[in-house]
Image 1 (tube, rainbow, N blue to C red):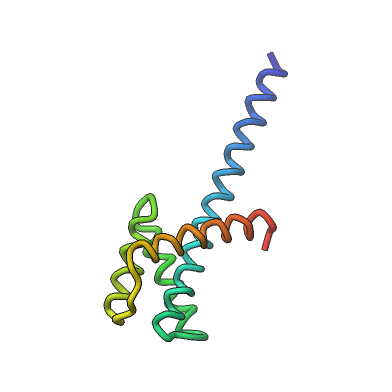
Image 2: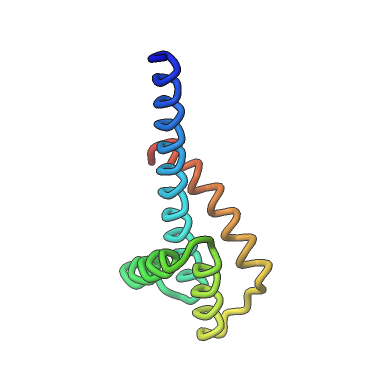
Amino acid sequence: MSEFDDRKRAQEKGYELSQELEFKAQARRARLTGLWAAELMGLSGDEADAYAKTVLLADLEEAGEEDLFRKVRADLDLRKVAQSDHQIRGKMAELLDEARKQVKAGS
């Protein structure tokens, strides 16, 4: 029975690790999305970093990515930056892939 328990514990650990890595990738995606949107809005340096933090915090409001999308959509609209919903969602997907690669690489 101990071999079965060991396998079960190993699977649980693997699942926990994959969930932790995915959480980190989601957070990194939010930051990268914030930096991308900041650049579109003409922000740079400390202003861009501060904005990216607000995007990260907005992404923690609810499960999924709709809170992140709504934040970026509203801010781009406020600054009159022309981006379609499709363009924003496409960039978010692209940045999630990049964030996953970065997290896996440990950077």
